[in-house]
Image (cartoon, rainbow, N blue to C red):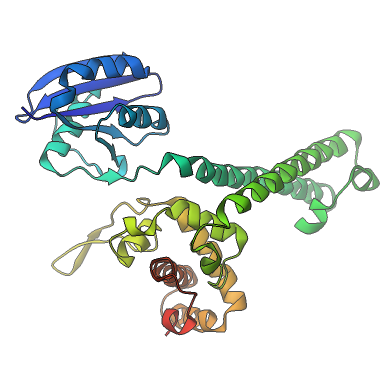
Length: 338
């Protein structure tokens, strides 16, 4: 008898359900987030279980890796792409876990990509760098706000980053104001030091990957963006076509229509937000350094607006990146912007 398992994973417990090929519940129980307990619960059904479905939450690594090591076929469900029937009178953890198993049985499960664990750590390190950059930016903006409140003037971010204790004291602010600014300055510089450490490590880990130097031939993409793109993309062959990759990068619009009329929009956040950010950043830089990109942008902007035109440039760069990684060829501006 074929069996299917769904696990509704929470921060401190997991609801485990095993169902047969007629959707009859054979086993269901709420267990602590302990791998050995979950393995014991599934063990009597192991030989008959076709697959185990786990929802892609923030804490899935330990469970997915543990089940795969134990020999189970694991599927990572994409929660943003799963829509249950809204007319249901009841929904709960056990029903959700059973629904995951049900979708797997029907072959309708929207799956997420299980990033290889040997590459997962360095990818998460790149995300940590981005987090620290956001924190540093918050400190710089706080210093700018203090300067504006106290003087009515402004200072460039480059000058703020170069500030020292003596620079803060020379401004002549009241002691408490100076202390607030000094606190922001010290935190900003500490974050900058850690960012540089992470960037050095990331470059060492990624620069030898096939395709890294080729991605850097795309206008607007330097070391940081190339590193982000390589780590978030993973293996390019996991995408069936350039459209799939563009959609994953959130460079494709989402529209629901019927009989030629707009009926709403889909889930615009479905995809990888880090790749979406990387290609939008690349588009901004490309406008400065690539005349062909600038001309394409101006044509688009004349027919739509600035944001749509910029996203169109990002879409072009994402498509170019896909073909570069697939074909292992450097960027060709004539193929990208025609």
